[in-house]
Image 1 (tube, protein in one colour):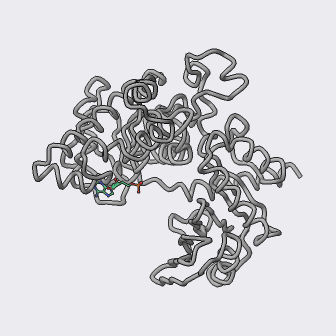
Image 2 (cartoon, protein in one colour):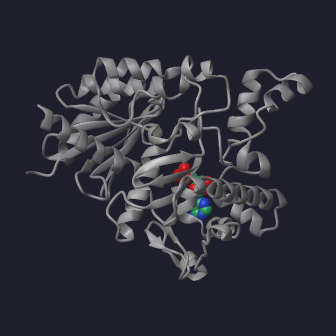
Image 3 (cartoon, protein in one colour):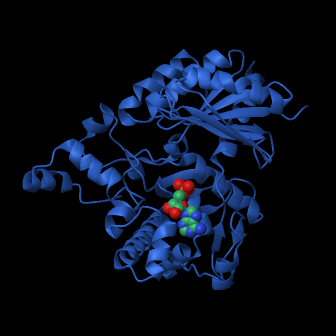
Length: 400
Ligand code: AMP
C-alpha cells in the first residue's frame, strides 16, 4: 500500500492555515498560510523543504485561495491526496471523535456555533470552500472538544440548575483536545508504555493555555470550560476569576457586556498583569531586567498552573508523569522550573541541568531520579489531525 497524503486545514474568518502531511512523517511536505482574505491585502505564503514562496491574492476569498493552492499541492504531492482534515473548534456534545463531513455534520457544526461564535462559522467557511475545490476527496472534521467528551459528569457539570445544561448545553467542554491527546500519546511511547497508556497530566502553554488529566488515552478533566476563557492565566485571557466579577464591574463601573468580554479575553492574562506584553519571551527578558510587572505576571502564571495541575491530579488513580507542551511549555526552562517549585506535593522533582540543556524543539525527559516523569514534548496538532483523518477513513472503508 502506498503512503497516503492528507491536507490539513485550519480555517479562520480571514485566514487558512494548511499543511500537506504524508502518513507517518514527522514533518509536512508543504505548509503555509493564506491571510487577509476578502481584503486587497490578501496573500498566500508557503514553504516546502527549503523552498519558500509568497504571492498576492488581492481580494480573493477562501475558495479561490484554496483553488490557487491546487497546482502547488499537485507539484509536491505527486499522487492524489486521500483526505482533507479540518480543524473545528466546537463539537459540543454531538461529536466524540473525528467525523466524515456531510450535510448533517455541517448542520451540527452550525448548531454548535452559539458556543463558539468566532470559530465555528469560520471553520464552516473553510469546509464549504474545500468541498467545492476538492470535490472527490473525503473531508473529515476533527474537533478541539471531542477528546474531552470522555470527562465524567462530576467533571463537566457546573453547579447550576439542570435546565441550563439539559436545554441550553451549559457545561464544561474543554479545548486543545488534539494537543493533549497527541502529547500524552507520545508520552506513553517515550516511556516505553503502549501508545495511549498511562496516567498523565498535560500542560499546553501557548497563547492559549490549558491543563488536562489523561488516563489510558481518555481525558478525565481539563481546565477550560464552556469557553476557552476558563482555567489558567493565558496571554491576554484572565482564566478563572470570581464569576460575580461581571456583575461587580457592571454595577460599580457601569461596564456593558462587550466591554467586560474585551477585558477578560483581550486585556487580561500576562498582558494585563504585567502591563507590558502577552509574549512570554518578552516577559522573561523584562523580568531579568527587574521589571516588577513581568515578575508578578510570571509568578501568578506559574502558581496558577501548578494549582490547576495539582487539582487535576485527583482525577487520576496514580501519576505517571507531567508533560509540558506549546510555545511556552516547549521552550521555557524558567516557566517549567517555577511551576515545579510548587508541585513537590505530587512528588515531582526536576533535574535542573536536563531542564535547562534540553535542545529547543526536541522531546526529552527532565525529571530527577525517583520523580514521576516530567517530559517536554513538542505538540503537533496537524499530525494528530492527519492521523485521525486516516484512521476514520480506514474504519469507514472497513464498514463498506
Ligand atoms: P504558541 O501559541 O504555542 O505559539 O506559543 C506562543 C507563546 O510561546 C508566546 O508567549 C511566546 O513568547 C512563547 N515562547 C516561544 N518561544 C519561547 C521561549 N524561547 N521562551 C519563552 N517563551 C517562548
